[in-house]
Image 1: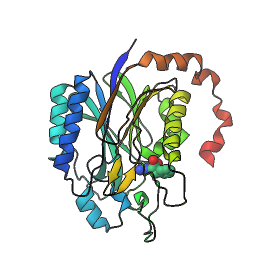
Image 2 (image 1 turned 45 degrees about the vertical axis):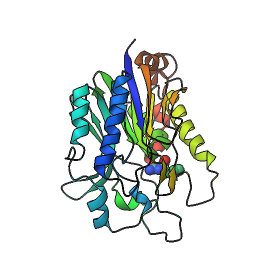
Image 3 (image 1 turned 90 degrees about the vertical axis):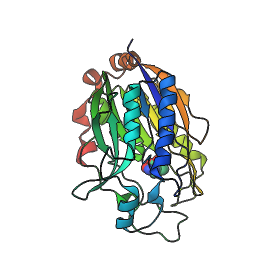
Image 4 (image 1 turned 60 degrees about the horizontal axis):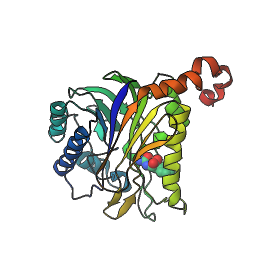
Length: 300
Ligand code: ING
C-alpha cells in the first residue's frame, strides 16, 4: 500500500471587498485543519486569491493591477508558504499570473512540503469569450484576460507521488487526463470556479453539478488516477458558483464530497496501489491502446 493523505480545501465566496490578506488567512485556517486530519497535500481552488474577476468587463490595465500576481510567492501569499513549510504539508494553488514580459495566464502551482514551488501549469482550455456582452447577466472573459497555456499538461514527483494538475474547464476535456495518464500520473489535482448559470442558453442549473461530477468520475476511472477538485463557490457579490468539491478514486467512486458552499475541508487517505490495480488489469495502456488508430485526435 502506498497511502497519501489528500485534502481539498473548498473556498466559499471571495467578494470584491475581500482583500488578499483576508483570503490568505482563510487558506491558512484550512491548511491547519487539513494538517490536523493527517493530510500530506492540500488542493486550493482556481484563482483562489481574488473574486472570479472574468465575470466583469474592465480594461486590461485595471485587471492586471487588481487581480494578477506579478510574482509567486509574494508578500500576500508568503504566510501561506511559511505555514505550509512549518506544518510540512504540500499544496496546489490557483492564481492569475502576470509574467515579467507581460503575458497573462490562469495558472496553478504545486508546492512541496518544504515550501518549494516544484511545478507550474498554465490553463490550456480557456472557456467563455473575449468580447463585451453588455446584455448578459455577467461576463465570462477568460479568453480576454488570459493567454492559452504555453506548455502541455505535466506530471511531477511530489514526495513520491506522481501528480498532475489542471484547471477548471480542462477537466471537461478527455485529452487533459489522457496526456497526464500517459505520463504515469497517479493523482490529478485541480481547482475550479463554475458559475451555476449559463449566459449562452437557459441550461438547467442541475446540469452544472451533474456534468462536473461525471467528468471527474469518468476521467478518474478511464485514466486510473485519484482526482481531487477544489471549488471556489457560493454567491460572490450575488453571482453564484457551484460547490461540489470532491475526491474521486480510480474506481470512479466519490470517496469525499463537500456539502456546503463555504470554506470546507474534505480529506481521504488515498491508496495509490488502487490506481496501479486498474492500470495493470483494465487500462494497461501498453497492451491495449492502439495509437495508430487515434491520429484524428491530434491531426484534426
Ligand atoms: N469555468 C467553467 C467550467 O468549465 C464552463 C466554465 C462551465 C464552461 C460549464 C462550460 C460549461 O467549469 C471555468 N472557469 O472554466
